[in-house]
Length: 248
Image (cartoon, rainbow, N blue to C red; front, side):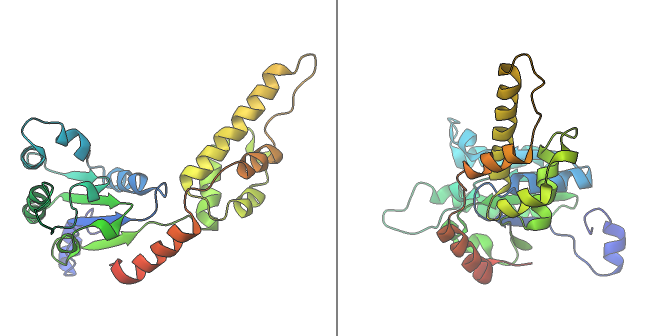
């Protein structure tokens, strides 16, 4: 809200955020979250891929600096860096890691990025404990936001997005929601695709009769065959990270 209403925010003394970190287990929707911010603001969405920058003959640190120099030309922008732990690793050790120069460059880049309004840096990580402590300190990031597994309401909405509209009336959504407690959005998508594939194969192999369409049983069968991404141990570590590191 402060980003989309900066004048009104200023009247109330609210400072719009300039940079945030999203953390949580894999497959929980951190990239989707970042894209949704850009969509809501109607700002360009620019994703920076550390692995691609690393392939430059100039070196990762120099390429990172030049990338942000080019981004500087945009009036409004949401910049997204996924798996930021690749370029913000803990510094230390003897001899110093080659990645320390990259971490140093990123730590210098963030304050410069924050100086101009109309922009937001969103960094995402599955392994927040791997980040350099200086990376998360106040003054560099306004919020450190946990993105965890979807609750019942969220799972209901996710299932609605993956079930064909024509099939929705005959599907027991509440049953699917209960059966997918502990599923990530990616897990639900995988199960939904499996159910659709099974129903499609049944439709093209049955001859002489009208094959049944998608059913609740198709989805429940696919759910039972889906391995969840987030283990109990990972979920426990995530809860611990929320207590220690989250900043909202």
